[in-house]
Length: 174
Image 1 (cartoon, rainbow, N blue to C red):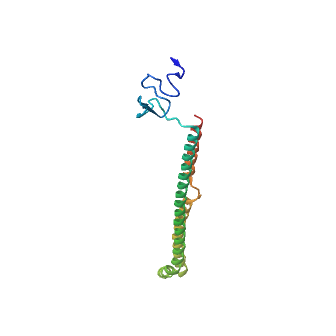
Image 2 (cartoon, rainbow, N blue to C red):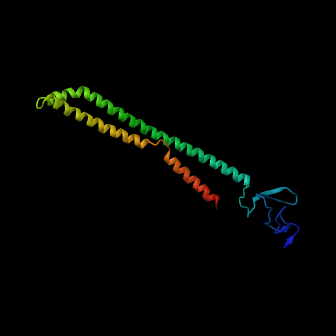
Image 3 (cartoon, one colour):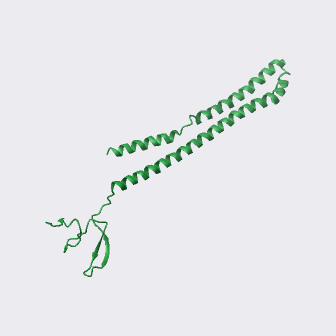
């Protein structure tokens, strides 16, 4: 049945004499004959509808929060890579120190001990080779640490950002 207010009393207010017919607002005020509010009740069929402006505002806020989180993740990832580079550099420095100290202190003692059985030149060659072998192992360990720290780009963050962009594109095309 359609009246001057349209179908089902939609529009400006409740239809007189029809219980439960509320206006299209979040809340309706039920009044008595004295025109005093008795109670406020939500519209039973009301669904949350947001304006385009509200939706754009929410999307902007969410995108801003997402960007801040991605930047924070990138900082953490780069800090970890920096720590690894520091450890690698420290190991390389340790390799150099061991090679230097080894050549200075231990070399003379080892050469003297081996020189008892072999000529002095052979003893010196054996000790030198052993010390450079130790330095080479430490150098390779340091190099491996540096490789793990490079390239200095936040790979996990980049993967996460790509996934976020793909998700946003997917939702935009729905």
